[in-house]
Image 1 (tube, protein in one colour):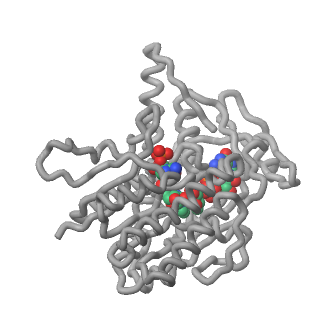
Image 2 (cartoon, rainbow, N blue to C red):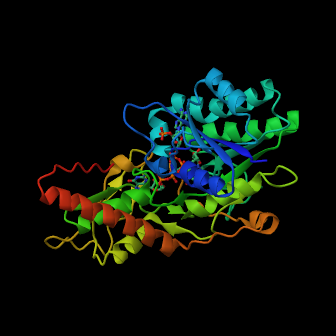
Length: 372
Ligand code: NDP
Ligand code: GDR
């Protein structure tokens, strides 16, 4: 029998890779999309199937994690074997601007799904994956971070995700649900949202290489992250739901780099010599140490990376480094893509897009480039 999966957040980075992965495994895949005034299905358009075609196996449903009755109706209609809750207001900096909405979607949205499954009597038959995050560790208490490391969330996003983490465990313990948390460290790809730092960097440097931009503005370039490739990480999400017992797992590469290093690797890929400019102190006294021996002043035409304090966060997560030994040993998982190969893939993708933009611009088309 063909298994059925329901993915919230199917239009996002991970949702698109997971949908591809599950379709390749022979699943019938259902995804929840939000209504938007513009198309928001770019990442999954290649999976679209004509619903009139014989035996389609990819379906989209309009819905929202803030709407409990809608979620329950979709669960009732689809009756999935597996639910992957990837939908979220996932931007840490934006969560400081919209903390209440973030809690509604990321925390209570998770509860709505779990409760929907329980009310429909599907809690014993449907397996549930919760997209938990390394942001839970926040102000880190132990390095590297593993499943037993204490949490200390540092943003409205992380606090909302902490609720989602515990409510998932609570439904597992209280109602015998197969429900687990994947505590995933940062993972990136050419499909990464354009305002997350890695994609912002590769996109801006590619535009600079094509003469469409001159300056990339960043916040805390000393932040350290454990970056993996999203394509590798969605396999883990599936593996976690295929075990005899539901458990929680850390997923990470075990390697850590600074934002500054990411810029340097991406720039090297493009054969660029970056000029670093400026420095910043945010209102809490956090200093980004960009003024150093490399800040010698830009030559004419040289690409500039400058610090703009507007990108500092009210509370920052300075360092994250994961220990995925449990996933490696119990699930036999290891990431396939190296940091360098991932940066290379992202740069190549964004350079291709920048070339097309330049071509359009040279033919008089107005190309809007927005970098946040
Ligand atoms: P994205 O931001 O790329 O995708 C988020 C998805 O959630 C989009 O499909 C978005 O829809 C959807 N969404 C947002 N708000 C709602 C809502 N109110 N109702 C229904 N759907 C909504 O995130 P990623 O793919 O990178 O991440 C997937 C999940 O994993 C998220 O929960 C994230 O918090 C978590 N995570 C991500 C990590 C990473 O490094 N990428 C690491 C650890 C955890 P739309 O397209 O319409 O905006
Ligand atoms: P993060 O990802 O907050 O770790 O959350 P992001 O790429 O936004 O930031 C990483 C680090 O880079 C610093 N930084 C900047 N960040 C952004 N976005 N823009 C900038 O200009 C900039 N300059 C420096 C940040 O301060 C931060 O330290 C991501 C999301 O996918 C979450 O949903 C997920 O849970 C975590 O990863 C794990």
